[in-house]
Length: 167
Image 1 (tube, rainbow, N blue to C red):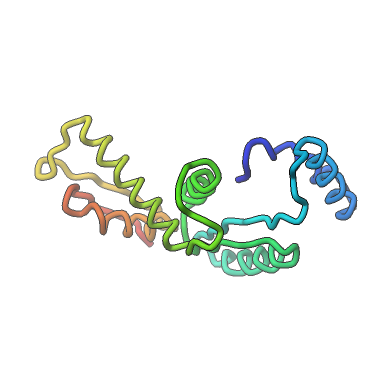
Image 2 (tube, rainbow, N blue to C red; image 1 turned 45 degrees about the vertical axis):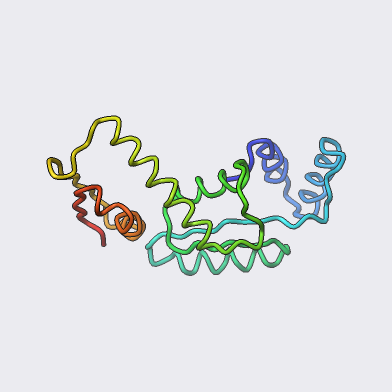
């Protein structure tokens, strides 16, 4: 996920058969549209992976590719796609104190903090009573099972959540 205003640049890049031509075209367009754009600015990539056996190798190849073009990388390990989308958007658009030097765990903790808050607010609207209701959550044997465990650590006192297929 990238900032919306840069999506057209990805199209320009992908339409080229020659890598150097692609880079030159994107840099030219950036200079035209962003007069103060510094071509020496280091890019940043947020990386997450799922639990499939191929994920480790794919992550390794992405890390090699990102480092070969001198970009910074934030590797969040096994997380869901929605978590990565949220983190990228939060980092790009929200007012926060995070910098490029902020550790990935600190950024991820902010996700869980925000997610827990919104979850509590959602159920508050329905006057949810912990002792009266159980929530059954099917994690489909994917990475969500690992991620929901962190969520449940923070929410176990407030919600009766039963997880299945946490594989």
